[in-house]
Length: 553
Ligand code: MEZ
Image (tube, rainbow, N blue to C red):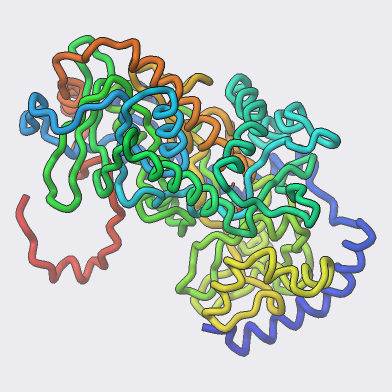
């Protein structure tokens, strides 16, 4: 649906302020960023994480007493999807050295490194290989590759600052030091990052970066990285098996309490499948499809936080889940595209965020949480300067057309082909008309606790990527998730292989930890009708549900 006449009328206000804003941008005059105190104040008043009802204490398990999003607590306090007595764990369907749970960027990276280090690898993935948040990331991957202007030192400081200095320093150190190596690894496998005509990789800023270190492939960087990793996995069928449409639903432990496999669910036949493994890499990604606080999401369809549940049932603590990332710029109109990511790269290139009067109200490259809180504030009734949409929402304008004036005609179409094509479907030319945006649920800042070698407190279990927590502290900066999945996916794959190749055949596979978890739920008097992991979101309209033929469990 193109912009209706009332929005076209409001766009005139953006056009009216544009020449002066562009002129200032050309002279390097920017709207002032918030001070540290100003940022804190903005977050406290407007960021969804700071709302009174945004957190609830977990009542069961190893992180009991830790307050996080109620939507996640609810599934942590649910019963397992499996009835342990009904699973015959002695009938092993697959046996492998390293089982990788998840077929996104972290899982594929782990599998490649594990196979390269001599392990027999099995990837079990919920949907197809590559159906993951990695695919959805658009604007870039950070790496201090330009030694004349940048170094891992500056990258480290930016990551820590973005995360409010709450990040685990050791995890950050590894992330930034490995970054240039990982970029070269991806390029070596054929990833096509955008380059200048002289072959030098192009870099730009992201929110909260002090140096231009965002490498990108147009506005489909994640898709390009995932394409590369997926192709490489498929190039090695002799070492890496892939089970698609086979989400893991519980870990299996051995008679010494070490991780020793997993129960999968075959989504086609709805049968359980038992996998025995000497080491496991948890790489299940994020949880946007839990729609925390009712927000729309940028996440892929399978992002339901399953790895958090499985690891937690087996005794791995959860950290940093009290902080949730809302990407500042999700589509709020056209309605059909609501929640879809509009990459931060637009703001990295200098696009202004403006209100209904066409006025800039925030520096466009504040760290994500501050930028999102500022947009929420502007659209709130406190300020009342949001743009009303035909679908009864409110948003702000992201002034993409100014980029064609600042950088030259054709810039938007060339640098943002993904978004250009998407909006064209609705008869909106984003090189001529701005986009209507509002924050959208984007990233799980926290997750399972892990160390910089990818290990967790559960022997035999390793983890990498969005399922983990600590490296980004309380707020991740743009471009550090594609980096995280590749750096820590690789590390988890290597560590898992070292462990697996030195381990004896696991004996006495069991689901005793699940039985214990159920017992604890019962003893605590926690009543629940839910089962977890969630696996897939349920979008069935309640009216339709009432009319459905119910199959009794
Ligand atoms: O790191 C991200 O979340 C990312 C690259 C998103 C974006 O704005 O493009």
